[in-house]
Image (cartoon, rainbow, N blue to C red; front, top):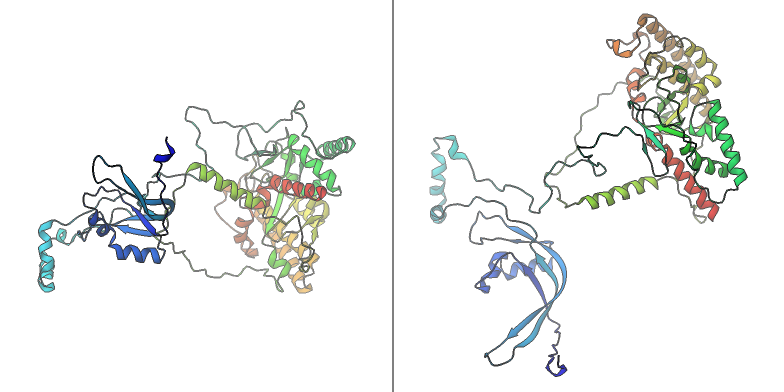
Length: 519
């Protein structure tokens, strides 16, 4: 191209606003009427309103507008003129456009009044209302619907599952293989009929960073001895009295030796591969006893030993009917899910503490039989409780010959009537450790004796009933302490955040220790 024929255009300082509409105009002077006139556009631009309503039939009062969205752009208004056919074209930039209104929605189906009814609009109001005063049929009261849909953006109109749900092809068989996490931890469901994960000696051991080979061998020997001693271990008891370096190495090796139940009486604990506690009654001693809601027991000045019956009013959240419609794709859902998981993963205690800030008043940490007491929940294996609490051991002996033929997801091999007194015994010990008053301890001790006698009587009347499903909902009236109502909450087959994410919590501590060592 010849440089002499290149035309240089000057960019003016004049700014303009672009409005894109799905229309072809024969008369461009009629365009402003579709968005309410130039003055309406100026007002919308000055107030930075995100939407500009556009009526495709500006003279029709029943026409519902479509909304043009405000968006950023980098364009200009170019004017091209050519006066005669033999003359060259002339171009000039009239204005620069930094913002535009673009119609990305679609027009809804609409009811429009017939033209013959427009004549009544010019008549007096009493005459126009006369038609509605002489109603003979109910159909005459039917009004024009306001709008078919409040959504004007194209979205996937289907009932979607949660973002993390991935449908399986119908042709494929449903796999019963256990699922593994990112670190290789195997998770299985208590209701699964498949075999538990088996130990694979040919599986290579994961690499450990910065740990000597002698220490790795020591940790492997330690883990093998521990799982020979007991096939199921709670995390805190397994890592008791070992260093942070040994613990970090153990967290690398445990996924190759153990798996975790997602639910059931052994949920959240490390189970030796090849060992299925659902098939062995001897595994009843390794079940978990859990209590929840310990904050009041630790911090409150007076603990409620008897549950008060407070009438709760049903409160419903008010959800706005006109909620915002957001277009989301599967890829965006995956990104949002990843961010949510990452946020949940990082919401634990910070690995870096500021040295300039004033020290916060930390809540005192209590050790209950060697396990830290959490405000939300506390759980301990029955074998550890019986070893440290003689009263609990004597009470459990009454149920050793009353085991079920098949374990329950809520109470395992034992009947459910055994756990209410055990929880009160555990609460009594916690109350002793945190320093509750003598009067409260005496009241709790009296309550435990009443519960023991009540539950033993219930066990005697049960006979050879193997399952709690055979009961007709009878509850002993001699010990109405409110724990019967709380029992459902204690025995809910829902793993808490720390239980369901036991391996994730271990990974967080692992990453935290690696960060400290790297610094």
